[in-house]
Amino acid sequence: MHGYVKYFICSYIYSMIINNNPFPLLTTDRSILRRLVMDDADILFQLRTNAEVNRYLMRPVPTSMDEIYAYVEKIDGLLSENKSFYWVICMKNDNKLIGTICLWNFDGEKDMADLGYELSPEFQGMGLMQEAAEKVIDYGFDVVGIKTLLGLTDPGNERSAHLLKRNGFKEDTGYEYVSKDDVGSDMVYFLVR
Image (cartoon, rainbow, N blue to C red; front, side, top):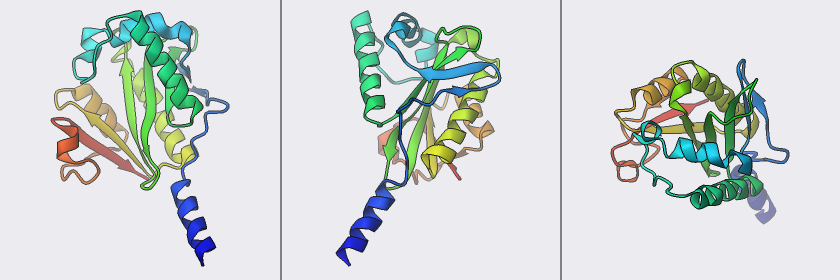
C-alpha cells in the first residue's frame, strides 16, 4: 500500500512537465519567442527602466547594468533548473528583444502557474502580445500540463486586463486563487482548461 500511495503522490506533484532542455522556441505569425541570453542585457535594461512599461508594475527599477546581468543570470538559473519559462519576444526579421513573456510561480499541487509579460511601448497596440500570449498559453496547457493559469494586473492597466479577458481569463473577484492580502491592489484573473 505504501508504494501505491508514494506513486500517487509523486505522479500528482509531477503531472506538470517543466522541461527547458532544449529550450522551447515558439513562433507566431510575426514573432519568435526565444531564450534570453546575455546579449539581450542592454535592451532588457532599456525595457525594465522604461517609465511607461513600469507604470503598473510593482518591481524595483534597475539602476545599473550589473543588476541586469544578475537578472539574466537569475533567469538562466531558473530555466536550467526547470523552474520557469521565460521567452524573449522578437520580430521574425530581427532578433532584437522587444518584450518578454513568461510562465512562472509554478504550483505543482494545483497544476497552476502565473503568466507574466511586458512589451516595449513602440510595439504596443499592434497585436504582438496577443499572438505571443496565445502561443504561451497553449504551450502551458497543452505541453506543460497546467490546469489553471493566473494573471495579476494593476486595476488601471486596461490593456493588460483586456489581453487576459481576450484570452478567456475571468476575474477572480472572490480571491479563490490568490488571497487579497497577497495581491494587494492587483486584480487576479484565472483561466482553467
